[in-house]
Length: 323
Image 1 (tube, rainbow, N blue to C red):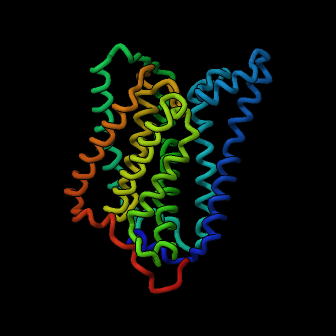
Image 2: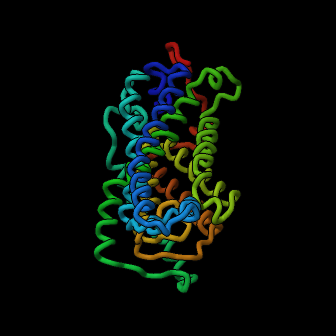
Image 3: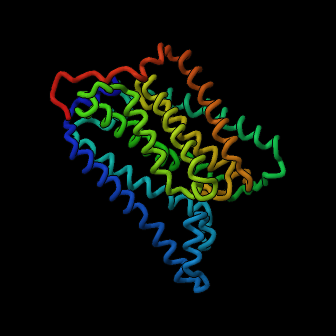
């Protein structure tokens, strides 16, 4: 049903290009407050040079410009707010179907699944972080400050889901549905839900190639992590026939990094409870795979998913014209 819902409305290939261009425009507009803030900081501090901008591109720490991290965190998330606003308002006009169909084939979004995914994944993530801490406590610094931490939690609750949900709407919703319902795939002997799953996961990895973690830890290991994350989130979506669990899981992942344990070189720099200067990407990837298996098996039992053959089954042909 998740794919069949996308077969309603207007799905000509050029419509996808228009929507993606609109998202890019919204993302660009959303960057304006950040660049205005940085420009003002540079104008007020003549000691800042082009080297500061270069350092910021490698390590997006707004304190370089005298901007506190909570404000910098907000400025980064506003970019996604612009992208989401453009996506939400243009989608129905271009495709003539409800935005909700990117999330669920049902008439209502299952908020219980979103909160379940968030809560269980947050617990698993914290267990992983505790394990990493116990293996090397000397790599961690406790930096709790009441006046910065409380606003950080509030901002994370209010704004961080915009960023994580935007990525889920685009990759696991819009692109995976669109690729799955293309005539090119449907008319091919390789027609399988596995194809849009893999392609959307690779695209998810590639869009993160601009993240500073790539330079910090290496292209190969970080792309392995991002693509694996895309596959896991996509499997949840296909097995559950909806995006709710993936929305919760993605939000919990980024919430952990923003609020509990941050690290130098991260795409988002915050005044988290702990900061570590020694992140082991291999441990991160291995731990992610383990908790993904546990989470998927738990969901399979809780929601009676049935066979995993659902992931490789064909996308059914619609009874009306689609492209």
